Image (cartoon, rainbow, N blue to C red; front, side, top):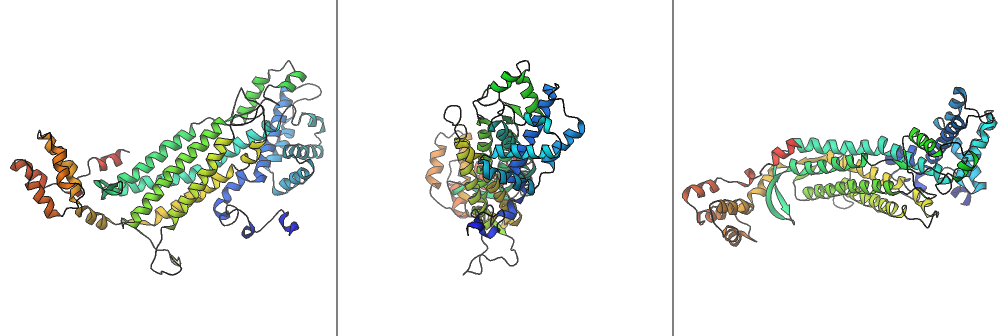
Length: 461
């Protein structure tokens, strides 16, 4: 058993976490960004690019700039990094018990084999682990969002926008506090979710991608001691910009993590909007506003053959909750460190892919769920006809227009807590203190017509 547990490969059915077991096919695209192998690859990229930049900055007899061929060969160490390379780093780590040092020793061996021994002293020069780890983590998070999560989210947003337009004219009864309320359209209610997602996605995209880079405690101590003539801040800014990131000028030994925390909180807000949508769609299914397309071979209950459960929305809700719980812990934990550095962030940052994974599982479930739902306009129309009392808002407003100061109280006494029939409603209109013309106008009012600007709002959005 011990040998099996320590093996490099295991079957997904043996995985402890469902992310790497049951849901592995769903999250496979994220492995290129958040796996242990990916973390090694991104850290090797930071180390290699730093070495290249440092040799170019120092440019003396001991460490001349690397030529094009040497530079290209070094860059292949991360562009062609494979699982075999990850295993090699891991083998070294079993001895060093330090992953960054294992990366450095791995690169040292590779450089020796490439005939680049001359530049080995520049490997990891003046750096602390965070100077490599955090740029790598930031790039992983940036690329995973850009290549996997954001496209999946955009697909959901596009689907909701298309549904909003298609259903813009489908009038339905609103429910506030779960009770019948002023009518709206199904399209307008779906459009609200699309609008909220777009707003938060744009906010996420505008959060700067920053990282720590400044030596042991953020002061470039070793760099300045060895080469006092170099402007190390300017060098660091250029190097970090070359990675597509921004350097934080003031840090301790570790990244401040504030903006990464803000991104995680924004992701959680995005997920909260989707959780809200999942619950609303679930409820619309439960009252018959939506039916679901039946999937051949699918089972809804182990004992009740008739059931078609809204399992995709339920699955999404559970996974969104998990994503947000882990994201909240990471966002709250990382910015807090004892003095200049403690190591409690290390194990937490390794879980950065977990909220991404649970989010992706949820997005895929919602995509399936949205594809299955079919609006039932007849059910919605029948529901509207059963609740003419929701026109009480319009009636009391009309009475106000006619100058009645007791309009609200009058209509409240006639309608509050009552479910009226169409006949009851017509009798109520006749009893109102209005002239014949006013009563005639109100008699023509129907719940299906009382939607305000709902249709226009959808199309403008």
